[in-house]
Image 1: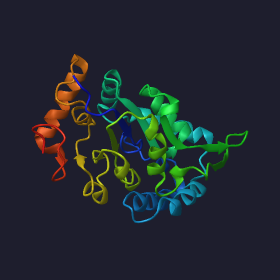
Image 2: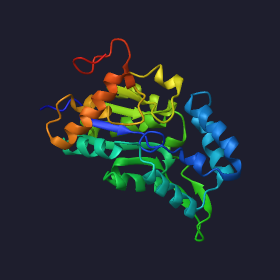
Image 3: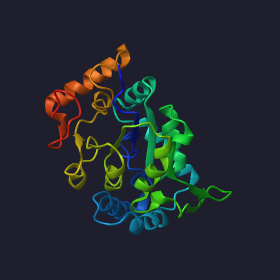
Image 4: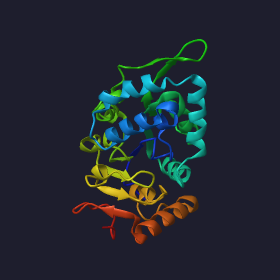
Length: 252
């Protein structure tokens, strides 16, 4: 069996985990932070307009970021573990690319057995007492177009074709440099993203990503079970393809 995709890149928040990290950290500023997050994810505000502002409002401590990491793991999206494991068994390179805080995203990556060097996120700094002391303001992931910039830098080391799976406007920015952009709307359905995506997955499960990446016959029992769940969800209408997109025979 020949793998159709050589690399799958996942967003973290509202894709691999049913959590928006910055919203969880927002405490007394929740309403303002959520407003800024949604405006950014819908593409109404540029990320650089909101990133530093949100963190300065929230000022997360080390303990709070550790708690967020635990919540990421506790709320892993259904079938995410199985999909990532099956992709890796079949030789597909799996990456995480997130505008979230690196210490928390790395914990989720470890849970999914994704190596730290295969994770892109934003470093955050703490003082000796664990209080917030800033973030890596030079990170491309803290500004609009940053995810595309990171993927372009990864391209020489990534086997193709490449699939990007995410829910937000910053994920959609990657579409020009990958072979397929999949909007995952199983946690948050953002119309500005789903209307522009090649493929939309509206189930709360990531299982449909597996047959999209590997084809209908993944060739081992564990992957086959997840693949069947994904195909059943697709058959039930949870997966839509943009007109003219040809992924698998019988899809669309």
